[in-house]
Image (cartoon, rainbow, N blue to C red):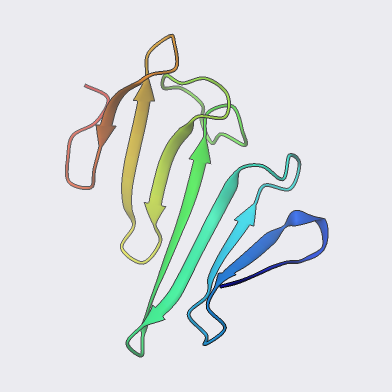
Length: 105
């Protein structure tokens, strides 16, 4: 297993040295929240890429229920599939909506 990091904690790569690498890009201000994860290519064409949004961190439109820094949405960029998360006032996971499910009930 190898691990590398570029300047400013912007992204980190991890995985074996044979090209099966996962790259994680972190937010620019806090260098804490993984905002994009790109996995190794499967077969010859498919590469898993997902983006992540957090409550209170670069939110688009705001709303919902969650404490700052809690995971709000994970998007599979290849399929535009979203998994949404909502928490109670104590920060405990209350709901999780996967692709195809109705959310914000």
